[in-house]
Length: 256
Image 1 (cartoon, rainbow, N blue to C red):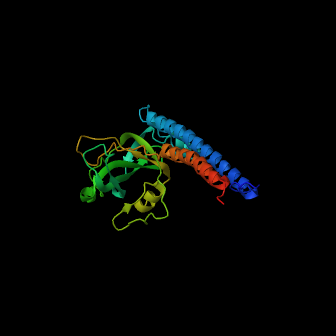
Image 2: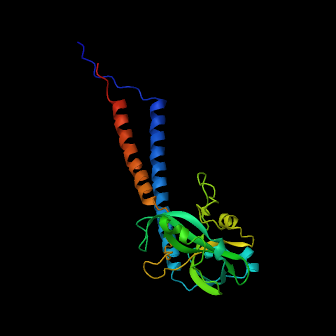
Image 3: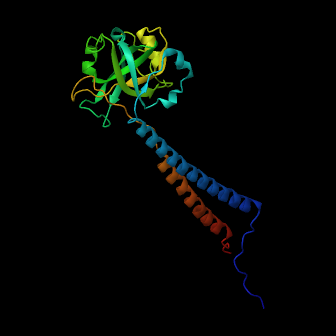
């Protein structure tokens, strides 16, 4: 008397267990990456809070020229700075920009920053960003005739130099237009030969509706770490689910 044989179970060889280990390792990696992004998020939030707090601190006086080589420029970034001297108004340079919803004043859209070299009392030059002007008004400020010619002092927010990217256009010398607020590039455009400090200073806002529209300092640090963390943790949840389904299919008895 014979009995019917049951469904045959597949043999689980080296490839099966190797794939299990690989997928579990991948899950662990996704968890580590998610935790890392959470840590980065905390760090970035702290950095933004720290930088934002600098905006309201008492201003630093711009050091004399002989101290510039030893300056830690990062300590000045987004910190108020006071400088005394004279505008070099005839060497004004425009820097193309576009203000969107982040604009604090009346005007936004395509336009230019009005960047004016300023001869500091202690020697050297710092570029002052007088503010934003719409493109239709830009030519009215390129000659700098509205600026004071006498000795003056200005307190504004120091902003680190912008870096040109691989696709940043070259300077438009015919119209004295640049594309990044890089003091070295601005000096080359303006024909400034004196030493130039490695940051610019954003002038404060003037009367409402006045041009240039100052006070437009924006703290803009990319902060996508929360989204990245959700993505990695999502993968960490999905991977073992897919693994479990795959393993069940592998060990499921084959029908005879």
